[in-house]
Amino acid sequence: MTILVTGGAGYIGSHALIELASAGFDFVVLDNLCNASSEALQRVEAITNKCVPFVLGDIRDAGLLKQLFADYAINAVVHFAGLKAVTESVAEPLRYYDNNVHGSQVLLQAMVEAGVFNLVFSSSATVYGDPVEMPVSEACSVGRPTNPYGRSKLMVEDILRDLVVADRRWRIAILRYFNPVGAHESATIGEDPNGIPSNLLPFITQVAVGKLPQLSVFGSDYPTNDGTGVRDYIHVVDLAQGHVAALCYLQENAGVHTWNLGTGQGYSVLDVVHAFELVSGAKIPYRLAPRRAGDIAVCYANPDKAFVELGWSAQLGLERMMHDAWRWQKNNPNGYSNK
Ligand code: NAD
Ligand code: UD1
Image (cartoon, rainbow, N blue to C red; front, side, top):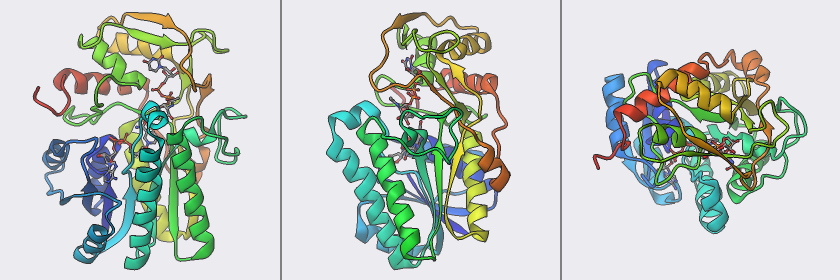
């Protein structure tokens, strides 16, 4: 079975390639490298000892997609390609809607024309907005995401639900990721954000290697144990394995299916800082700062549905997440670049 992996050179996509390969899937990667390096794919080749077919291009290029579906006997698409920086999405909403929503539409149209109806889509817990219920299950209503990035994810989810009503051939998995962190155990692939990281873990690891002076803890007056925000951090390898489970499920089940991919365990910002310090031996200087606009106090998953239906559950705990994130950062202080 051959999978088209859009955005396969990115953080989660590159980890998913390894799990797809070990589950016996063939694949071809489509990525425009707007937020990735082809070096990641070379490292995936080294880990899997397998050639990674790669097409440099954009999901909005209908002609290219037509050619790709003609050149490869593609059975399913795992669709990671998208822009994901929340602040950037506020500053450049049109770019985000064009890339994430219009891009997905072009991809879906090409799939219809090629007769490919199996899709796994990267959504986000952000679609729940400020969840009314904790832990948040798939049955919770989707809220109003607080930014254009989140709204772009919800719009694509809505399109996918509409497609299944219109055509019963579709088999679609919507995966709502919680907070992916960590790296492959080889420490040769990992998260490589551009510029100053906005997410917590890459910020911490860059403080640890001395690239940034100190962490700002955004908010210390939330109604949580220590006043700092609580999230469901999930190891990227566990997350990647969830995609394999979803693809297998779609082989047996038509329609649209939505799963939370999280651990079900919430940790505060200070829990994460302390866990990282323990594992790395590094001291993370931090200051308590005001809340970040758009942040919610607490968000963690009820992951039961994925366990019952997919037989999937996260296996790797916080300590392992910290360990792997640290090894990746330490061994690759400048990510994939040789600066
Ligand atoms: P990433 O930026 O590392 O990977 C995305 C990849 O898509 C990059 O390699 C980028 O070059 C590529 N890409 C972007 N636009 C493209 C286009 N128009 N055509 C072709 N390639 C394009 O991000 P990631 O963390 O690996 O996230 C993967 C997906 O998961 C994204 O859709 C993201 O929104 C979603 N997601 C991520 C998180 C997270 O915290 N990392 C959380 C929830 C959801
Ligand atoms: C953010 C996005 C979300 C996106 C997700 C993955 C916002 C409001 N939400 O989620 O839409 O899907 O990233 O890309 O941006 N923190 C600090 N200091 C920092 C960075 C973060 O204290 O320097 C705190 C945050 O306030 C939060 C926690 O750490 O409590 C996690 O933050 P982050 O990693 O940015 O993820 P989310 O905010 O959950």
